[in-house]
Length: 198
View 1 (cartoon, rainbow, N blue to C red):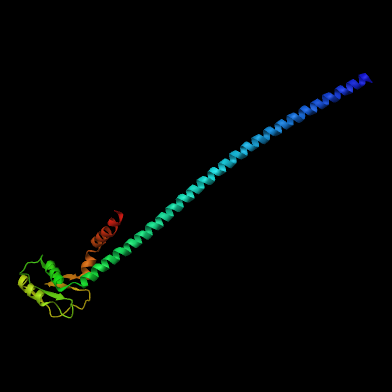
View 2 (cartoon, rainbow, N blue to C red; view 1 turned 90 degrees about the horizontal axis):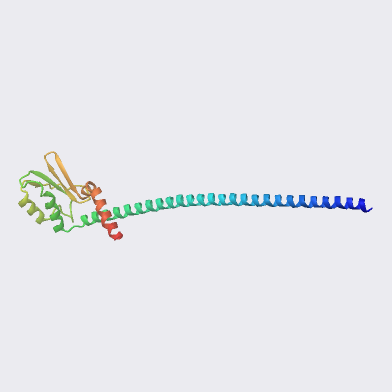
């Protein structure tokens, strides 16, 4: 039995050793595959994170841009409203001019025409009368060729119209505001918002 036992024992030991080596090798390979799979998974996770971060940054940038655009539109609308209000207040101020201020306005508007120019002045009534006695006297003195029509303008926006032949120069307040609207908007915007920036 010794010889046969030794052979069997030797074959068993060798088989056990081979099985242990195979198990160790399979275990090492499995461990290596697990490590590689884990590394690959970490890479995929990292790439997915980077893509998610990039997408989030793009979404944030688009959202910021949209919000900024909306804020700009709202600010522009508010500025336009404020400018419109400022122009309307200027118009209201024109309607409430004193007789002296109105006289200055009329004479200033007529400075560009020659004193001997012939024409007709049509006025919007103010305070129940066509024009003040002082303005009538000053017009006769500075522009004797201009006739003052007794027919009042039916407009309610103040001012006057000068007619020389077939040509009319509309100096009613609303017409003057509309004629100079771009310049008035620019000036009102500058006054309202340039000071706010400083």
